[in-house]
Amino acid sequence: MRVTWNLDPFRDQFDQSGLVFAPSLFLGRQGGAFLVTLVALYINPVLSTQEFSSDIGAQRRVALSDGSSVLLNTSTSVVFENRLRSRDAHLRKGEALFSVLHSGLRPFEVTTRNVTVRDVGTIFSVRSDSDDVTVAVVEGQVELSSADQKVILSDDQAATIDASHLISRSDAQFQALVNWRNQRLEFKRTPLMLVVREIQRYSRRAISFEDVRVQGYRVTGGFSSADPDLLLKTLGSVRI
Image 1 (cartoon, helix red, strand yellow):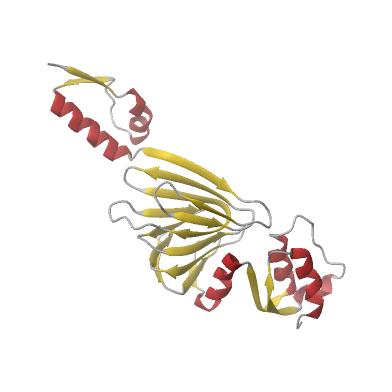
Image 2 (cartoon, one colour):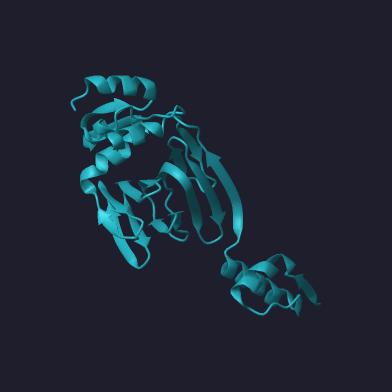
């Protein structure tokens, strides 16, 4: 008995890999099944795709098809691909907290810009800004890589990757980096210009300075991100 296996659906993947593609192969039943398995393993096909986003000033928790979950912070966009041999999340913009279901055979990776965060089962936050990317590990361990650099982060550790792909540890900022999940913003002698930039992420209103000389004033305090307008009014009573 001869079986014809039509591999047309995989033509694009073969073309991209540089392998020679045969339109159809005439093989025995067992040989054909084995070949199809090898092809599937090689190209790591997408089993399902999910896209999520959150509005300005809102948070959104969603369940991923692999059993993991993700909490999206304000104005965030995430695409998740559940693949045969891996689980790939792409943080298009914003900030998200990933709670990953452990799977020894299928690693979970988050990519944003030129940064990759590889996880084996943990809880961690990733934020993508125009200038840099920050990663903070709440529980477990991740491998952070950018260009030719790699860093391992564990519980209560954080790192920042700048535009030149330089990775620097920022453990002292860990709590401030993860408090957003509780709708809290923490500042410690932070320039007012940076404070306003952070508040702007949660507000649809354009915020500007009437007097640019105050931009360098330092702010210390903790605030709720749920009401950015109230937060701006509160700044008048904050230690500056």
